[in-house]
Image (cartoon, rainbow, N blue to C red; front, side, top):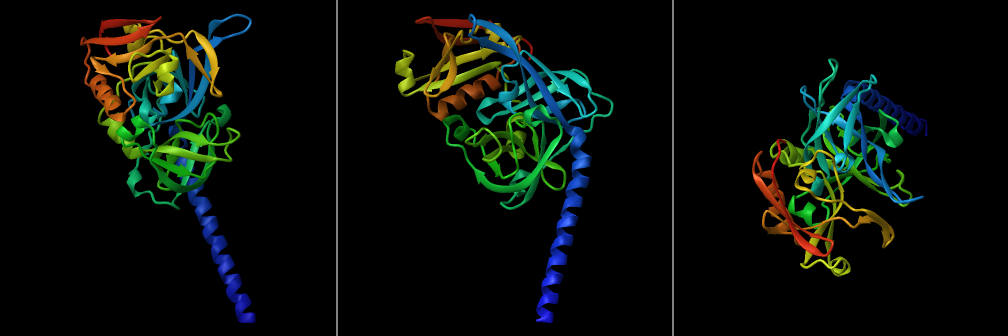
Length: 346
């Protein structure tokens, strides 16, 4: 019995020592990478319904991570896609203006660039997400509820592939985690214990909208492929794909269309003359803006519900260069209108 008790105590002491060592490693790595994590503050147009319908400037916030010494920052596309103004706050309180350089809404990834880089800015290193296995330790630093530089730790719970058409066409993969993720964490980095970025926080599945659900991050290898190797073209459109029954409801004269919700100031979408929604309605338990353009085709490529056509449109806009003439066919107030412009400098 004494031998059994002694063995049990030995196992317990070993486990506690390992736990303490892991905590110290996490603490040390978190200190090293914290300066690369930023809070992203945005301003975008929002429709105020009462006392009368009008557009107002609404603040928003998210998270991001600096990855280059010249000021390139990774975040989630939904944080900045339709933003009229972007500012980045560093851990020491410095606020720096930024602009969107690249975006892939279908993968919820975006890259913004600082107007100038603080002297003490410290970029993080991108890791190889293919090496991450279920059960591996990770941690996330972000700005949940705008409370910057909050850390949560957990594990890789699973690897998931989204089932929507555009994500499937882009071969999007997600790392699922049990680490706490809340509103404002979007765009923040998921780190491995070597201090490398292995994912960018995208969304949570939750009954309450809080962190009791499951969190998901876009893999760093997808970042390499879609934003660094390709520089996904930023349009400045926040849109919603209409297909199936929605086509009949909105009288779309083809199998699918993209309902424009918002258009960012000084974006290519604004330059070509696209119009966002002007009325807020509640449909099927959600809110959306209606009354704006419905995009039918881009550069002669018709919008359809399948991933292949969406990928063709994405490849087309990514091949555009400054000065190229772009045409977009839209359904506007019941009529098909063709918009045309020369692409401004990116």
